[in-house]
Length: 321
Image 1 (tube, rainbow, N blue to C red):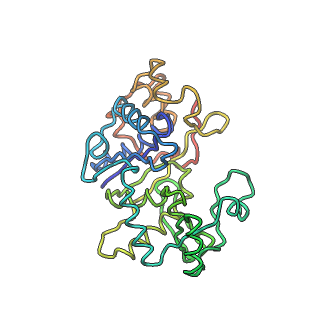
Image 2: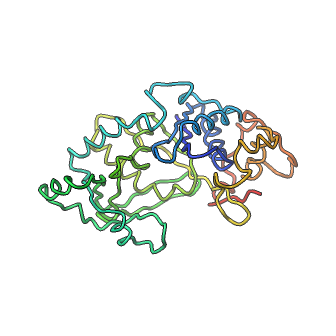
Image 3: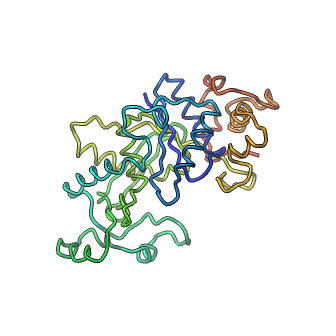
């Protein structure tokens, strides 16, 4: 099997990131699998190479070792998404030739006006299919004045998958309304495209990530099914998924890079040891009995025996002080 940790280098790694890295690492090592680290720096505006390198430094300091990825290499040309864009472009061209994607010329103002979610700032998930039925002559005329985004044409369907901790999930996708963008008009590739293509290319068989990404499963499963049909000669396998609870503060706010004293770099400056950070996370997450560890000092190798059937992992959030 193959597991992976795929952070976005938009800031220094924080406790929420390490929590997911810890779970994915332990699961992979328990199964004697191959552990992959991949830098999801597809957002070229927010991601920074130096932050990615700092993130790798902190992972190494915590005791993580990976079998494929930056600094160790592997069968892939690169484990930085920013260096894999030719691969994404080739797949999109194949989908275009199969007429499975279409150009969309709608601007942000229009997309906001048709959003099903009424709150400002929420991501627009629903679309009205306006550009799906454009004629070739209309497309050509619009291309002369605007670079389009590319949307995947969805056929209405029902999808199911069994999540390791959140249980059986049922997803309904509605044609046109759920058509989603694979590449933006400015050329940036969408997360849902890059993550699926990279997991396929790298042979990932298990994905452990935060519960906040559970809502992306419909889009990703549909893309997997589409690619299986487009490339029947390839052994495209959908990974097993586990969506772990998010770490939140006492007020219920998700831990983020913006919060003070939450990054590994800041904790290191406060003289926290790697074993203390890992131990405190294991206690907060319910992986070990906090009553037995008043001030836990536990190395990564000491955590490899942990039982992942604990009730805390079936929660949506875990409060960490």
